[in-house]
Image (tube, rainbow, N blue to C red; front, side, top):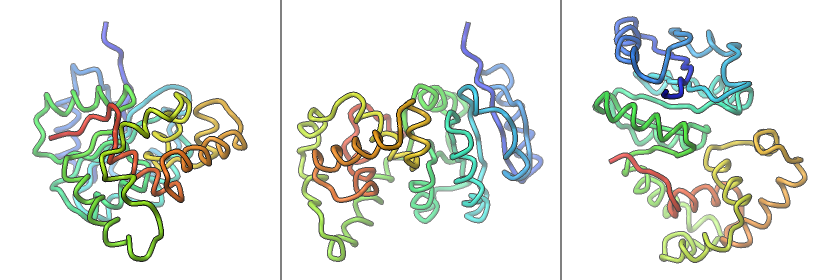
Length: 231
């Protein structure tokens, strides 16, 4: 029997929200609560005790609700967060990359691929369109003159060798950095102390030759060992 994933659905458009609820009937993603605004589901108990999915439909950049997304991520460390946008937008994608969002799709995706993406998401994968890597490369290339770091360690093909230097725990923490998780959230998720998290992060930065956690997250996105990219 398929595992049932409780889902919080947020969509400001009534018709779109009801349509998604209908599509999800019969799938392994059951809508436990639906609302027009993220603030309405902030205190829902789902995600604190077991893995759940937050599906946020963004009809505009304003509906990403940055403040609430950050708070939801910190208060629901077990939950996975997916954004379903009306259309692909560089600015929106750039924003979600730093907000702990685990999945970014557009409404051009078929129901079949939507649920396949969600299945991968709940197994710990990060789902972004292939354009995400182009965006990351462009943004950090533009910033290279202002930031002193070894950009070559990201894009020169050494990723596989450097990945092999990381321990299993370091891979787990690196994935958390990609999701934008704080040290406190990482410690809670992995059941270790914040001091231990800091030690691991310092080791990760040294091994992959970057200077901070943001650069580490970009490196991980550009050098995924098993990350699935939606095409």
